[in-house]
Image (cartoon, rainbow, N blue to C red; front, side, top):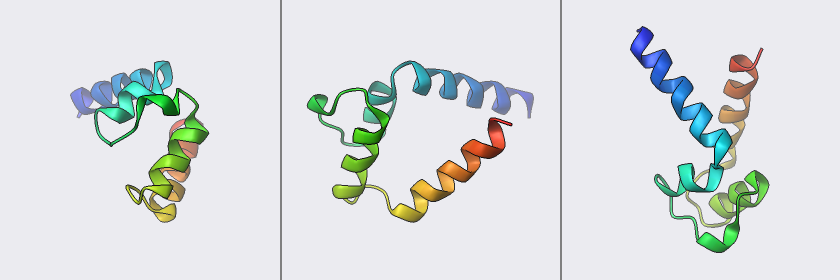
Length: 67
């Protein structure tokens, strides 16, 4: 269990440092999107790679983990 938490925290740190690089390893994100999280989310929505409900769920989880 502790290893999973450590892994999750490492992933969170990587995502905070460079969202575009982290997400481009998992999604198709063009380099010209830049490192702005809002632009990245908009691209993922527009390209159909994620749904609004997935983003909403992630935002709820973020609130839980950042308390």
